Amino acid sequence: MVSSQLLRRFRFFDALDGDELRDVAALAETITVHQGEAIFFEARPADSMFLLAEGAVDLYHNVEAPGADHARAARALTQLMEEGAGIPLLEGQVGALAEWKVGEIGPGELVGMSALIPPYVLTATARAGRDCQLVKIDAVALRQKGEQDLRLMNRLLAATAQVAMARLKYARSRLIAV
View 1 (cartoon, rainbow, N blue to C red):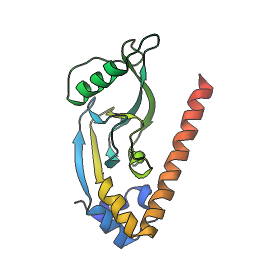
View 2 (view 1 turned 180 degrees about the horizontal axis):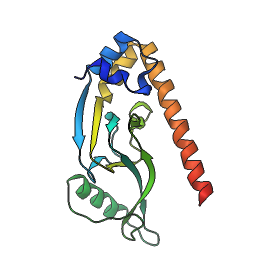
View 3 (view 1 turned 30 degrees about the vertical axis):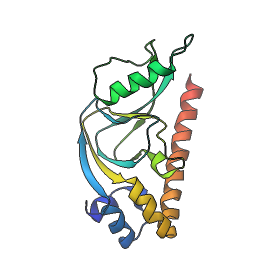
View 4 (view 1 turned 90 degrees about the vertical axis):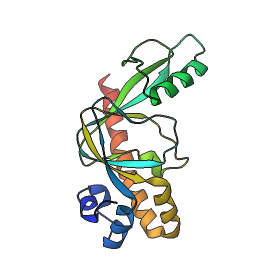
């Protein structure tokens, strides 16, 4: 559990009242992730969401290498990476999987918005670009709470939509620059 005062520091929660903040705080904890470590992996269930208190997070999308059927190899490599195996997949590397950087997240921002958007599957891999302090929220419990408190869920979804729109704008600007 974290304090509701800590959550108040994040703009994501601006629309929540004191009781709603306390409810969310009861589902949260602070964690540390060191530079280069994964916070979560693409295509896995989105059972947690995070708010970045300090540090930097880089988002990556995994792309299968062209010209070969690598589906099984890609799944196996992803599993090995999740288990901490030292597989040097660098941005743009040719292989079963290539990991491409698609975004950057700074302090105060939401990481893992897929935790509030059905089908609740992560759409990117998140890695610490620098040592990070994050607030980790149990998204499964938060969604269950939201089923009972529609006002809370409506406010959280509105904040998530704002994050999604900002990320879409960022993606568009990156595409135009290419």
